[in-house]
Image (cartoon, rainbow, N blue to C red; front, side, top):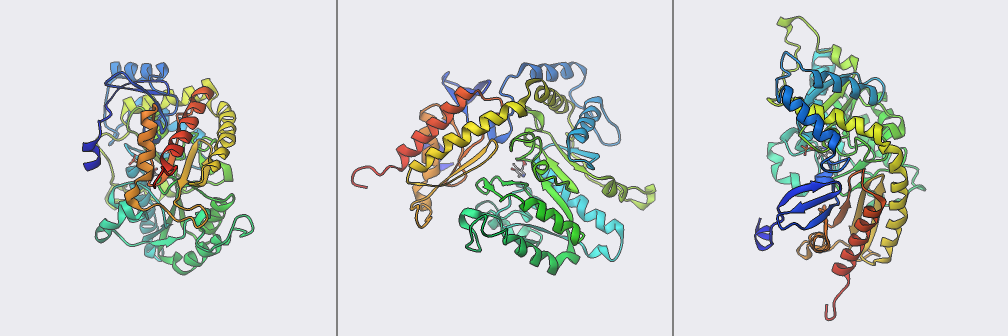
Amino acid sequence: MKDYEDEKPLIIVKGEGSFLIDSYGNRYLDGVSSLWVNLHGHRRKEIDRAITDQLKAISHSTLLGISHVPAITLAKKLVELAPEGLTKVFYSDNGSTAVEIALKMAFQYWQQKGSPQKEKRTFISLTYAYHGDTLGAVSVGGIDTFHKLYEPLLFSSYRVPSPYCYRCSLGKAYPACQLACINQVEEVINKCHREVAALIIEPLVQGAAGMLVAPPGYLKEVRRLCSKYDILLIADEVAVGFGRTGSMFACEQEGVVPDLMALAKGISGGYLPLAATLTTEEIYSAFLGEYQELRTFFHGHSYTGNPLACSAALASLEVFAKDHTLEKLKEKIAFLEKRLRSFYDLPQVGEVRQKGFMVGIELVKDRKSKEPYPLEHKVGIRVIQEARRRGVVIRPLGDVIVLMPPLSISSEHLEELVDTVFHSIACVTTPRRGE
Ligand SMILES: *Cc1c(COP(=O)(O)O)cnc(C)c1O
């Protein structure tokens, strides 16, 4: 807040395609999709219209004990699109909550299966995981800056190392390592699986950790281990879902079917708060019973599955089909990959990580030793301030510069985004005379 007070605040009043317009009429490229949510641009007429049409019918009615048409239609669509076997949909209204629901369902599933599985009460997550800001999600999180302070409030769980190849905890390099990190995962699971309800993972990319892209095959191996040791797999697709990694869901790329899948962010095309937790018939059936048995999943939010948000989500999925969004994305992903290579010309770029339309550019004080910048340099913040002066809105994760434009961005604007960020990094990291 102190930094913010010293700056001229940026107040957005309008959106138009890939652009944001501020209160002075300045236009900015929306380089992080308004925090990883926007897919088809702002003011997409089909989505605008779906919301106003729904508005004329009803803005909200509850999903507690009753239902409404957009929720039913959307659930059907989600099941069609999701990895085979995920047939049940539980709505909520944000990503953290979708994760809480997955954790609670996994826990309750084993409790209701009865002994000896009643011992399965805890979770495994990755060291640099981010699953949201509510306390259950923070308990399985591992980003010290966001999470450490709250430790006394959290439930304990097990950690396995994140596959952060640039700073490999085993000191190995891919592919020569042959995924040695998976052995560490198995060691942990082998010791604790009797107490573990589920392992939670962000498939393919650990987003908030700094866009850490897992080596190919890692997710598939995690799935194999979960099945082998009888623990559930929770895929947190909140960031990676809905086309971000190049496929509708990240799990698809390794042919993985999780037991629970959390969706939010892009689900409504970035228009309104909505989330869903998908699961299997097997898990669903553990919650069925006579009223007096109380096998119910007692979890519901006031705005769970809001009809306006569900209508926006349905319209967004229609745009995917109509625009051939995923097909068109391929070329843009390839362009991005090519253009990003030039970032290594900048000496302070340690690593450029990309999976589909998720990009993280890690800046380091020293490329050779990979030594990070001291915090007080605020290098990430300075880069985004420079980019803003040049007409691009982005937001860093520490010293990792994130690019995550709307999937609908034109090649021309994508080039503009990448060029601006390149020059902003160059401008901030080039030592001035006397430095
Ligand atoms: C953003 C995010 C969340 C939390 O979603 P909110 O809607 O911000 O609560 C959870 N998991 C992942 C992987 C995320 O990127």
